[in-house]
Length: 442
Ligand code: XUL
Ligand code: CO
Image 1 (tube, rainbow, N blue to C red):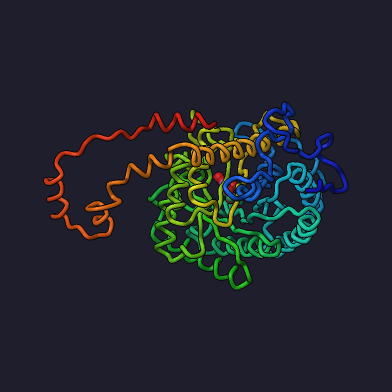
Image 2: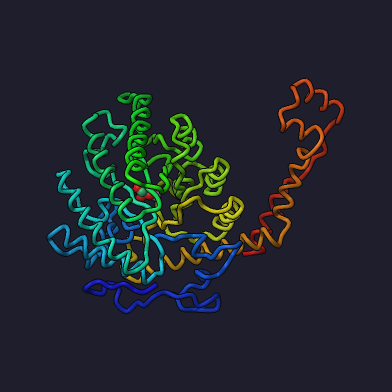
């Protein structure tokens, strides 16, 4: 990939990050992510389809509830919104190509600032879509997915498609329509719905049944519109249990799968699983991956990590090799992602104020994923990990156990077998042994 500069170079003094191998001590080189390395029949580039998140990297200036942003963006200076947005896009494509990231993701309002004028917002977005098209063509970078931010604007304080007021729902629809148009024009592989405020704070003012019905109707309308206009990619729902609303309708993978099944959306929608959302739901990332994989809806991943000591979405860059190795075992056994990729929905810390910090963050994240995948492949091929789990269920492979799986045994039959076979022997689950295998191959 060629580095793509605009009129101005924003990340001066940083050249393209390259693979140098595990022995390298260059902090701006990959030690594991060799994009051409083949693992389990695919290159690392094909496995991961890494994407840069526009919002965290080029929009969020590091503000928190106690103080303003600390990241001063040179691309955020011009007074005209479209000119400012083009500078930001120059900076984005410079960063993405210097990082050798094959994809990016955005919300509509990340790309260009919106006002309350719907038609003017559409025009602004369209201008940037034209600009992005050229940038994608010149660099080879592609859009992994697009989405609409229907949670930040104050009008969405009570939700977007689940808002008690129809008028607000219509504004959300206008934004989603324009974001779908942009995604189609840019050849995006997916379109994401994260239900930021699709939930409630108190049942005292909420008709939950009606709100969920509205959400389903809205998703159908969006899907029908996109399909009619030629969108061939995947729709993705991104579960999150809380924050900003206390109770969210897309709590976790099981909840989302049940909802999609109830409303006949399972054929078009898959799931975008975010690490920190999984842990906030009281699950491991691995649990959410397995649930989605088993239901055939493992679409895409938002990579980050949470913090063990607090209960909100810290969106830190991934660096937990054990967590990711276990996750990559599931991903490999599931045969990979269905149409999606790995989007770094992660932000550098407020005090990480140097432009290089954004590079260190992505280098670390990509290297951790690469090392985890290589390790998981070794575990699957060289250890008895797979064999152990298979044998653990061997009693269902033949005779009565098999008959039970096939639905051929009644409760009476089972009772009679219990008597015939006597007290079962205790068999170890071997958790520590298996944990040691993971560490051995890391
Ligand atoms: C919020 C979050 C979003 C979605 C896209 O927690 O993860 O950025 O990924 O709207
Ligand atoms: Co996310």
